[in-house]
Image 1 (cartoon, rainbow, N blue to C red):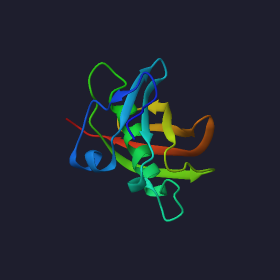
Image 2 (image 1 turned 180 degrees about the vertical axis):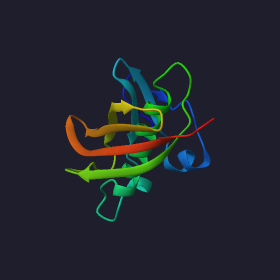
Image 3 (image 1 turned 90 degrees about the horizontal axis):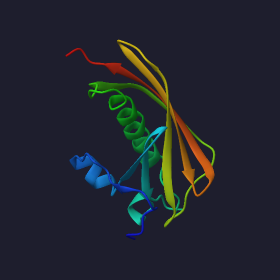
Image 4 (image 1 turned 60 degrees about the vertical axis):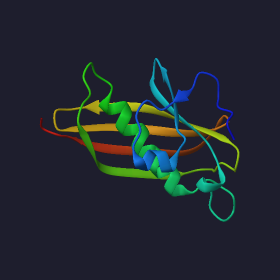
Length: 135
């Protein structure tokens, strides 16, 4: 499945874990960085819905990247707390994307929420707290 939503391009950063999870795509908007994923068989549970662990990983990535790259210089942060609530699901072949809202950027902690959409349906929300590392 190679079709991606218009305006998205491969995620600008990668790692062995992201390569395993992906392929991930991103799009910059006025509201922040949107992360997208086309659901493949490797992302699904036995019922052919996206696995909650995939969404949890995407939440961590979307929240973290939006916080870390929200200023003029990248901010070194690590996840302190991550909570996710599932209100729906996505099936094999569907496109999902995240939209993130930064709540607060402090000197030692940063807070944000993200929402997952499959088509136009909100299927999950996540909130995260990140520790700002001393450099």
